[in-house]
Length: 293
Image (cartoon, rainbow, N blue to C red; front, side, top):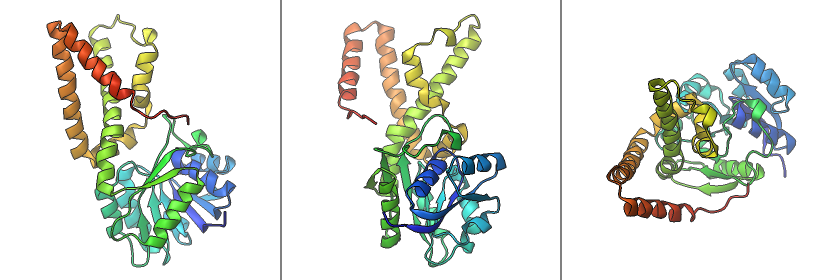
């Protein structure tokens, strides 16, 4: 693959940003990768792990010569970042991101782009519960999906370069309207995270009410599987819930209705009704595609 970019800048060298940096360097997609962040120790580790070539703490310095800048920070920070350094970008530069929310966020980023600079929204659907560059890997995106979310304002050449970047990272790249993205991901990703966090909150309350119950000591695979994603970054998910609040609230209400119906069946001792509800859920779950990655 020919070089895509002369210089790439990654704002936020954590799990996603660090993994992308590793790929950019290993595959020669960029001649130089500069990391920008707040924590010097993390940036030094990123250099040691091969995620970036060098780092700066001054974002204006880090982005001024970049052909592509990737925002890999919590989504609520995008506006602050762009207001700080967008005017430092050279003409023709591309700004992209890895955020789990698009919709209004994409529109906001587009408004903050200077003339001649292009924004392309992207969401690689990959990750782990562990955060930080130490958890990064060159194959994090291999076999996973990445959704790009162009609008009528998106520059076609910039879009194609971002698509190529994620294809080279091993992803299957899909194109989707930013607001449709937020509806779909709100149901299949944001709602499950809300449920997992809330379930852990309920277990904390149960343990508080009855301190003698050793819940953690007796937890099995079911609880671990159901709550695995509750180990995700609270900072990141706080911002996702807030930026996609209308969809998330609507889907939580749908979940509450379903849970309430199951609760009523259990309360009334309706064995046939319980089995019917569980069988319906089981059949729908079995329709999910099998993933080998």
